[in-house]
Image (cartoon, rainbow, N blue to C red; front, side, top):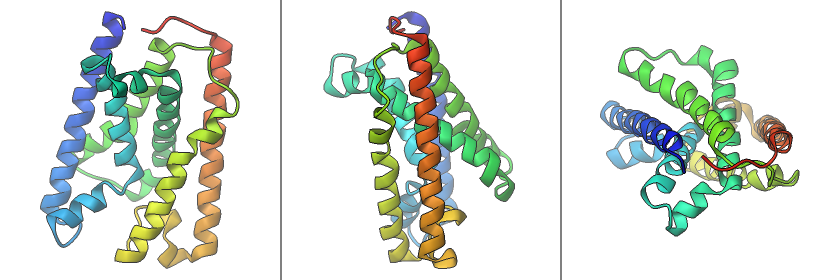
Length: 211
């Protein structure tokens, strides 16, 4: 890992971790649920939150523990490309679908800017600038769907237990199973399209030395 990549990852991990910590604190204080534990579970039930945690992990692990199992895992081309896919979708879906429904103010607006715009841009640029290219396969984006699928399963179970869903377009209580499943299938298809675009760029740029 070169100095530029190391500095980039430390800086954006610091920004990302600060945003997540602040948003968690705000969620607990404002009481999104009836208890601190419930508020914490609700906060970490947003795909945005989970994906930003992954983004910070792939930034920090290779810097702090490059020779550890998690460090090597986080530095691998496939993992970094998968997280780039996830967080690119986070940014795009928020900008084009969710931003009209969520207008935070003050520090909340700054945290929102970080998790929905700054971190997606930082992760995608990190992948473009500092990650080796040429090893991804066209089948990889299908495998990367495992995380969104697992998230969908968690959302169904958690939502049924507390009658709450993190996003209006998958709110089974309001939309019904059929509409919510159709919407989620469309979202999975969008994940796949973004993933295939990443593989296409990987093949276009070819193999390069890691940053």
